[in-house]
Each structure stands twice: as structure tokens, then as C-alpha cells.
Length: 168
Figure 1 (cartoon, rainbow, N blue to C red):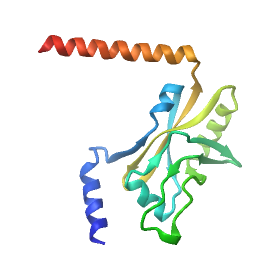
Figure 2: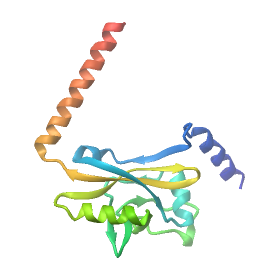
Figure 3: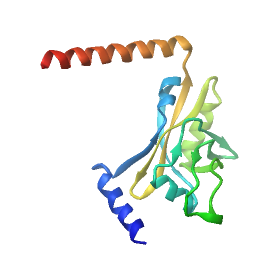
């Protein structure tokens, strides 16, 4: 039990002033989609899943969210098995329920019915001891939009580099 307490103490120190510790980010989502709105949702997890998440063993890259039967669900998010979980371990890519307000679910349902919109997980974090996921209402980018984003990012990087060299 001592190792777990020590890990929790280190986790509390690593948290920012808002009490948020980001464990996984989906950087590919911001490259592939225009993010219109973001929502914070709780995630229903088993015991071995939260232990694995606290160790940072999460991959959001291929994940997406959807609404089925009036409930929000998170699909294809890979949470690795917990090493000490033995027979009580979870399925790494199982479907997980998202905890959202009913009005948010209805709003998202209406918006995702529109052409080209989908729900994408952006980041997974701990807030006040609970695991939360930030999902974004996203519209897909075309290839020319992606190239434009890359050009802007490279230009910004060049400007930062020039300013840094000038200040030396």
C-alpha cells in the first residue's frame, strides 16, 4: 500500500493550481479537424482502468465518441492493462460510457447529425481525483486546410526563432 500512497502524493504535487493533471492529449485531432466546441465529460471506469490511467497508459489517437440510445459513449480509446490486475483486468479498447448532462447530450446529438461533424476526444485528465475527458465537436479538414495549418505553424516557429536570436 505504501507505493500507491507515494504515487498519489507525487500526483498531487504534479497537479497545476486548478487541480488538473493532463494524462493524454490527442494532438492529431487538432491537425485533422476544426474544433468548434469542447465539452467536459466524466468517464465510467473499472478499478484497473483508473490505475492504468494514473500511470499514463492511455492512447486517444484513434478514439471517437458517439451517442447511442440517448447516452454518450467513448469508442476505440486504448487503456493498457494494469500489470498487477491479473484476472480482474479490463479489455483495453472496450466501449466506455461518458457522463454528460441530458441537455448536452441532446445538443450534441443534433449537431452530429449535420454533415461532416463528429465527436473527438481531445485530452484525458484528472480533476479533483476524478477522470475527465474533453471531447470536441469537430469538422474535418481538407488537405489544403492541413497544409495551410502547417505553413502557419512553421511561420510562427520561424518568427519565434528570429526573436530569440535577436534578443541574445
